Length: 194
Image 1 (tube, one colour):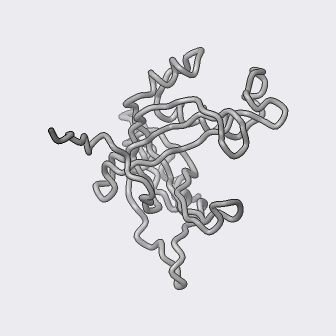
Image 2 (cartoon, helix red, strand yellow):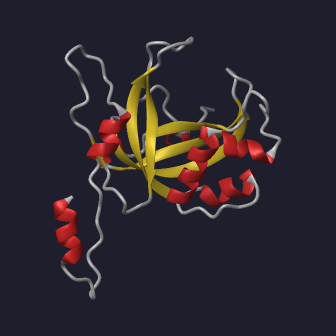
């Protein structure tokens, strides 16, 4: 008998997301150890929801929480020393996930939650993957803070596909909520002057 394949549950490998603001759904999160550094890290598997050009594409984001002095992140103070932990906390906040006392509980609460990310492409500069283009999340936003969309102008003249993080974040159009009923026009004038 032929074995059935559940294609919808298989992540594609090597697919690059275009630079832009992408709405993601958190599929799952796990704690792992980096094969390169031996440091503890949180691995988040994300699936694109919007815009439609990237819907259902997936990416993986790594948050290294260990340090040289504490590779397993056994000391709670280590969390305050790593960029990975800071980025992870921002993701959790922007995805509107309650900060549970353990990673396992936080990961369970995060499943299915959505957020917007400023996605860039960068070229690995060193190591065994030098020269390889990969996605990088430059910033996290809550739903409604930014509008999803991809950057159509990503190719440079030499065929290299890269977009600096600052340009994607800076060009992101901030979504402004409608003024409250009791709001006056003073705020609008101040924004125009800036």
